[in-house]
Length: 468
Ligand code: ARG
Image (cartoon, rainbow, N blue to C red; front, side):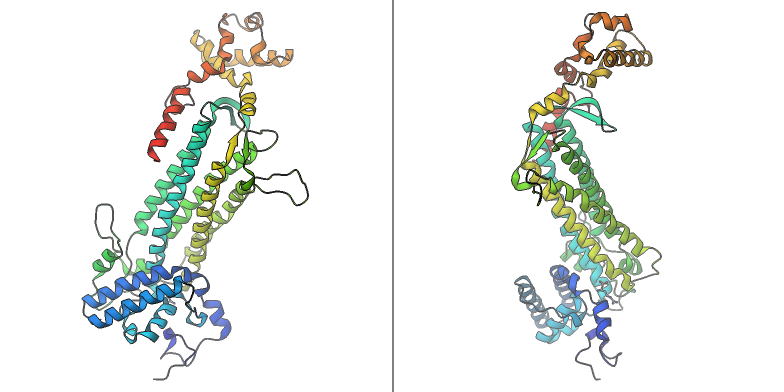
């Protein structure tokens, strides 16, 4: 049997020669899937151990393969391994080099296809990636809690429709993001449970006629759930073409990015001269090439902007899978750059947002000035009338009329006289104006989840404890 030297091992025998240069260039994936090298080697080590156990490899062959793979791993880590584009992908590069060095390497691909191999590698890679991302998210949550604790007494206007609504503690606003991020963690961890299933042994599509020990491979690679049960894919056709886990990751990551983009937007608004609530340390801002006075919140802007790519990656993956006939199709090779990009982007964004917040100071006087707007307590004034026995609808109407009167007379709401208030409605008593004491107003909001003084302190303590 003659094999063309330039032909990858996947073409030997069947093909007269290697692919045309432009075909090789179009179909290669080594330029991006080299990143799977560590997990590819881990998978091969487990597969080799199993092949030894079922008698396909001798003890000596197993030792030689293990040594060879570990050595290749060290060389890749050190940047000394030469990737060959003509060998298409990471799987073929490593296997070909192993076989060149260790003849028994030719047995490594027994009962294995690149179809189940790549599914395994991506699952192993994503498993690690999710764990690293969860740590970054926890750091961002800690940064938000720390900023809230450092400014526990700061009150700001809360907004709906980007119009001043009601006063809230700054910490309450920041903890809203901690809650969102916690749900992101839950979704990622839930996704992890479906990533954490071993597809190896599915072969190209139909398993193998050889007596593989799939459980052993799965145990060696720690595909075990919280209850200690080994997790194996249950349908070989599904296993080689399933990328649901990648879509789930991309979706959870997209929602995380969307949450961070909202936080980014708040920061961008708050550092504007008009708000001036926050000051980001110089090291975490950038300047303008033209306007010498500028200090821009570029981390937050890029966090907001990169969300577009992360959402796009989710769309790309869904579109890639739509209508794909069973089972593995080469289209699936296109999943990797999308998954890599999503993972890299959300991890960096999460980390940089945390670093930025850890280097941000709150301008307490600007916050106090904004929060002193008495109109923020108009609803409290309606609640006052409710306490006096008035139904809420008429109370809402009366306070609306009071607001209109304040506007007409050019006075802040809390500067109206008792006589003026009673002129609108006689239910107002001498204690009506005490509603505008911000401190007591905040003390009254003690429902679970409300921005009351005690409740916010309780929530800060809960998160501090939960994140420690
Ligand atoms: N590079 C391929 C991918 O990422 C590996 C699997 C190739 N399988 C095949 N039958 N050509 O999907």
